[in-house]
Structures are given as C-alpha cells and as structure tokens.
Amino acid sequence: MRHVIAGNWKMYKDSEQARKYFQELGSRAAPDASRVEVLMFPGFVALGSLACQGVVPSWVSLGAQDVSSEPEGAFTGEVSPSMIRAAGGTFVLLGHSERRHVVGESDALVRAKLLNAVQGGLSPVLCIGESLKEREEGRVREVLFRQLDSALAGACITPAMRLMIAYEPVWAIGTGVNALPVQIDEAHALVRERITELLGPGIARDVPILYGGSIKPANFAEIIALKSVDGGLVGGVSLSPVTFMELVTMAAG
Ligand code: PGA
Image (cartoon, rainbow, N blue to C red):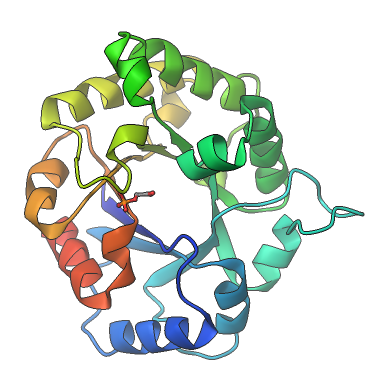
C-alpha cells in the first residue's frame, strides 16, 4: 500500500498564510504519487479561499477538519459536506481528539458526522485513540474497539468512500512524546482486527491506518518503517512546508 501523509493545521493559518504555504510547496518537485498520497487539512476559511487560486499543487488533496452531522439547515456555525466539496475539499477529519476531548464530541456525534460525510461525498479520516489514564488502566483495546464500533458498526462503507483510520493516542498529540513502535504496532493490529470484523476483509484490507502524535522528521523514519503503519497524520510539524516536505519525502522513500 502506498503511504499517506496528512497535515492538520488545526486553528493556524489564515487565507494569505495558506496561499504562501502552497506556493512554497508547489515550487518543489512533486513526490512520486505511486508511493505517497498527500492530504492537507486547513481551517475552513483558508480552505474556502484556496479553491480558485490555483496555488494548491495537483498532488495535494484538501480536506476539512470537521463537518456537520446534518446535510443543511438551521445549524448556526456548522459547515456541511456540500459546502466543503464546493470549496475543493474531498476529505474530512472526524473525531479528532481535540474535538472529542476539548469540544466534547460524543461517539454518537462522531458516527452521525461520519454517516453525513460519506452521504455527502466526503472521504472520512476517522481519528481514534486512548487517553493516558485509559492506557494506564489497561483499556486501550476497549477504547479503540468502542470508538470503532460506535462510528462504523452497521455503516455501509464502500471502497469508493476511501475511509482511513488515524490512531492518535491523546497523550502523544502535541506533547512531543510519540508512541513507541511497539505501542503503535499493538494498537494498529487491534484496529486492523476490529475493522476487519466490522467492514469485512475485502473492505478492511485497503483501509489505511495512519499514526498521529508528535511526528517529526527525527522520529518518523522509525515509525513509517513499521509494516502496520500506512501513513502519518501530522499536526505541528505540518505548519512548515520545509518539515512537512521532509516527511513526504521520507514516506515516499
Ligand atoms: P501533533 O498533532 O503532530 O502536533 O502531535 C497531531 C494531530 O493532532 O493530528
């Protein structure tokens, strides 16, 4: 499977900063698309401004960091799948740990968003992961299975939807402490096991499982070399086109 490198800008970069970033990215040689797929998740405002500017290199797919659970209606502040698609987004992050733990999104809401996203033609990147307390209590398996079950059980997922799972332990996000290779391998094996049960082997086999949490050039070679890792979801280090491209190059290598 080719690797996936996804950048999550979180609440950083306005439209002008986003334009400059992609100009810089576009000045570099395109990575080998048969070896690496590149996704970027700007904030909604920057995403909306990029569509018609022609600065985003053709080898980058854009996505949104969140989406409404409803197709349209009186939902102040929400953004629908069709709005994201109109802005050039084809992917969406769902259930990112900051949405679950800072904003307070429930498993049920993440599921509703996932179903609305795929019905609206967006490809979901479902983020899951345990907190430090849950890990210390030996509940990694239980938490990952619960998050996968609640989002995916009974959902009709087809290969065309391009579902991806991002395993991001909460304690590794933005902390500088990445999970150890053995911890990543264990968690990814659990994810692969459960999605195979939930989706069937034919679908699950092709679902990429990304690791996320304090990825940087210094630790990424070891992480991307793991057979269980199909790619990386990168926060802080994706904010610089220079370091982001280092990761893209490593993933393609
Ligand atoms: P980080 O964030 O790379 O800054 O740890 C990862 C993420 O939130 O997806």
